[in-house]
Image (cartoon, rainbow, N blue to C red; front, side, top):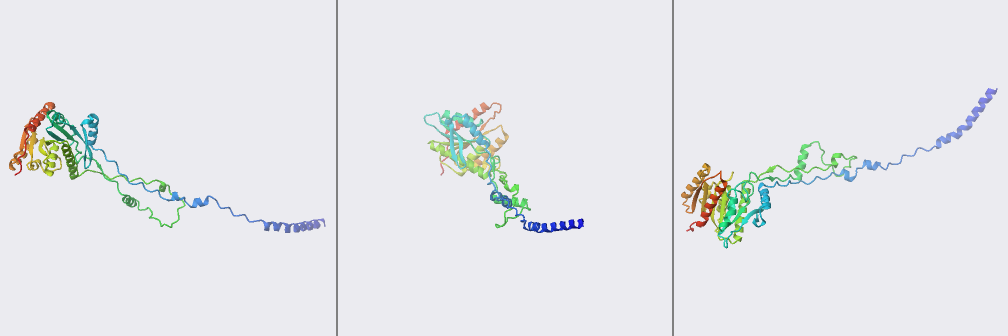
Length: 357
């Protein structure tokens, strides 16, 4: 009996508790949705400056390597007095010329000294000694700086255009995606490579000036020297070329005959590599007095001088005179003094070509 009563009381208590707990379960609020993460949009949307590709650096051109002749001219500017230095203007810019006026009340004229390949305006053979000694016998001297020989002058090719660089990049990486449409969504992540600056394309290979370009530069400098001599009211203008400088002097007079230039003096003249015509074709046709100085001890010089003499006889050039000298390699001072005396003797004769009929 007692056990039945206890079970009945337990069931009654349980019945009374269930209506109270059920509504609590039913009214328990559903968990609130998680608030939007403030960092989510930034993660899904790449910043504008990160998604945009860094523009390629503009193509650059490497600075031209200074010519050897320019370096030598700078050295002469530091060594010689400013009074001897003249900056003459030519088509390729200014260049150094060394000027020494005649040590006389009235100068006999101006001798323009044209050095050979790889020689400076104060070269110890012919050019330097003559430019220093001629003023003492009444002649002003003007020695020039010529550009490097055409096969030695350094030049830099321009850098490739940006379009060429882009096409080359596309060919080198065919797996690279094509350009995306304008309305394409921004990527969620920007690769690290896209944020790096695209290196500027390198300049092309070194190129050399053509013989025609080199000739234009040389002849323009000789023209500038003749113009300077004219500005000094020179009574006579003489072009003197040493080595390949003799070729350039003759070629200048063949292209631009000038009544102000009355004499051409050649000293051990030769044709620079890669140029024509030979001197035996160029010199006899000149309509002015020519003094051809050569070293008879040098077989090549003697053979070339004979060709020039024979060509001058065939064309009956009356004002062409050859002067043979003896090479003195063991005594350069005496050799240069010999040359100076021969040149001074020629200038004192005042040789002139006969007037054209």
